[in-house]
Image (cartoon, rainbow, N blue to C red; front, side, top):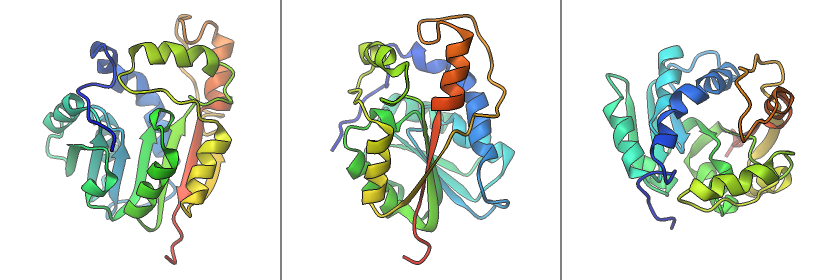
Length: 227
């Protein structure tokens, strides 16, 4: 069982800007939800951090209930404090079974690249999804991305957990082995990508656009509706 931590980053302030930084990507993730009506849905956010994704999703497309789960106890406390009147619950745990299961859909954003045992993760996801439910796992941190060789040691410097080196093939294989149907989308290929000054992750605008448009992938993992 993976141990709980207080924060994912060794510098907690590194995480405080994530809600604003990730908001445009979360909106694109919401845009590709296939169901037209999610008002009766139960939804899971894996690696929820401070809870911003579920709050945005609920404010955009209300649903029945949502659960966020994360290893970082401090971040989960902040998420629960920010719920307002939304039907959301956040918990600190490494075990998806602790959420109670029965989810119509699940999401994660830049989480699967930090999970050592993807096969175990995939089994846990399959167990908490309803038949016909799906898991959208989004990441551009994988071995097939041209920038990953530079990014990985930088992330390892400030991460409180290990940083594996998963490829597209190993990610897909883990979910296929768990009995889920897997498809992949370059879901930002037609999105407007915000440009920012060059930094250590994106030295040029071309690298930023190329990475988001080509290598930011959504793995959609579908549970057989007949199970």
